[in-house]
Image (tube, rainbow, N blue to C red; front, side, top):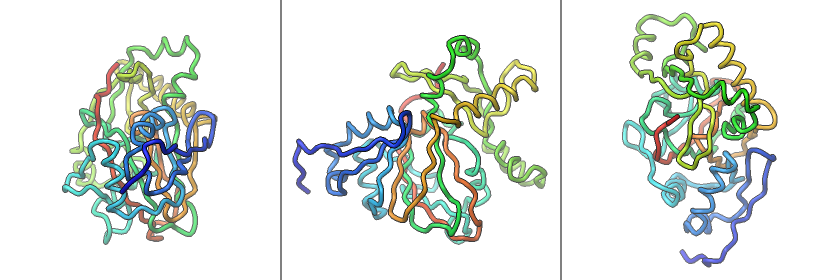
Length: 278
């Protein structure tokens, strides 16, 4: 594959504080000539949309590898099928948590850097993927509120999302989900770049050392702020679209759709490169 080194990455911003469309062709993207620029743009914009790029699984893996090390699933594959059809995915119960704001790999020592998601089968209604930029949301806070958040730590539990969609689970199911683990994290992540982002989502259960009521009000208020305008983007899918997001500086969720619709997305991931640090 031969692509001129001077080729220009074609882009178009979607909103002021989140989202950019990548309009360059498949051949250029697979060559890796734009990899450094794409990584920089991802950190600055949070979400990159590749409209109807139509990557096969093999091409998606090839493109992902131009950007860094791919993160494999627990079972070893590089491409993961996201579907609520038990014939296509073994993680249906866990995937139901994707309808609530979250970021992936919250309890990992180094949460994954980015996810790349391609649309294969779409539902008749619903099924958008929504994003918010938690870098921009932190930067938009008043300085006095930033000062109040400094040093706060939050418990994150991988089993907490279960209670969103199954508030009275069977004990066996709760024990299974509780085994996924929990971790204490700073509320504000200071990245290696020096920028800061909010660490929120449906896994966040309690601000350490804070009254339960005050904790709930603080976490809910910050989530409402971070997921509001102008930090929010909702992607309406077309088959063949691929969307890539900075998992360390965004939250995401799927909007409701018929659970028996066969919606199918294919995901690759980039390995994490830094721990969550205060």
